[in-house]
Length: 495
Image 1 (cartoon, rainbow, N blue to C red):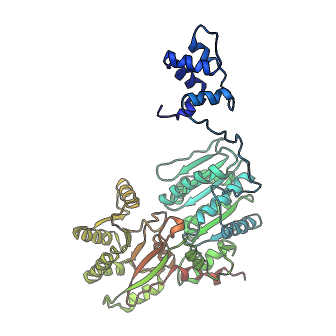
Image 2 (image 1 turned 30 degrees about the vertical axis):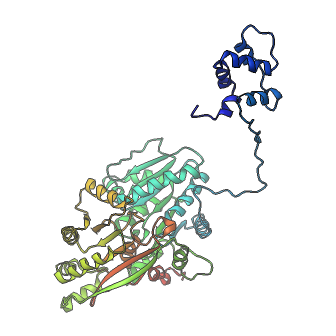
Image 3 (image 1 turned 30 degrees about the horizontal axis):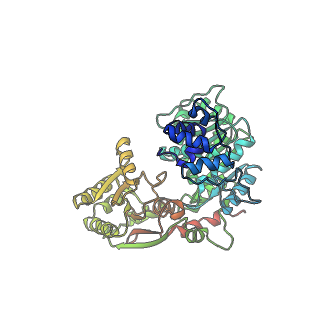
């Protein structure tokens, strides 16, 4: 009675028969008389045998008897419109589709390699998964190899592939994991699917036996390297060369938000461009010189306020120190350690964080060292804030707990002080503020740190973001990711 309306109970024969049999005998005889029944031995049996057809006079009599109104008939078939919009479940925007099309054209012609350059927050991974799905549909059976240098990036890629293939796939195929505790042994079944592999694990297997990587290369037709500015590092380049070079059917796709290795070493940057045959597809948006401006306007990236925290450390740099700064790709660790020990500098950082908590619920702090991250987190915790330290020394279970807690959707203010582990492969869109307390000459590293905190509303992030960069006198600093996006254009131009 609670689940059905009285009208539906009368319209449904099963429940109507029950109701008729529950009438008092006098009521049943009255209804039988109204329905025109005369000769019967069992009034209830006679009533349940009556055909109360929809729209008939007997149906109207039945409803009148129970003091109900006959429900109007609804159309059995809803007329379909002549035209209607259909939204795909794993779609690309027009600028992403254009970039994907350019990439596929480059991969289809010699030397079959290209770098896809898209800024953080612009859907680089989603675009790549569409390219991979097209490739897997076109080549059957085949293997695609996705290489990344951290376990976080490997896990992120595997999860995203599973999600994308659910909508873009045309057959059942396997996802093979080869990082951390995951292993892969080749047999005849490993011929169709995607292998997501950690570069360090592949290199470690290569040192034991070249047979594994030769087998992987011979079965694959596309190799994708995430964070491709790492591609010419000695170990990674060796892996890529062995995977791709010997096989004419193999193509190489690099993915990066920063198409250079450094800020000031043009030779290293030129080597990266040469490795990808000077072929780079850059995200282009009509009417915008820099796509970052478009991404901010359309709320894929947050409207970001970049601020500098100026500090004169009094390092008293020697001539030898200055020479090392000029020669090394990044700042020497012994200098960074001296900066990390500066109590006044650390106090300024802590006070800056305590100012940010007035406006932000999720804050990342990029520290100078393991000890520095632990120190800042400890002081913040003593001062009453929910702060944690995440470094390479943090046990994996503890790190997972801290990161999961940080990502939870709550109004609590949470701070993670980290060193070296959350620059890539870390996706916490609620993060809206970052403190870059680690001086660096690497524009790549700086862009990665900033990218953790500037996701916009359409990427699950925030309307606004705040980046505070500690600028030490006589040490380099950067202004924004928009500057970084066009920094390496010269070395990618065709000769």
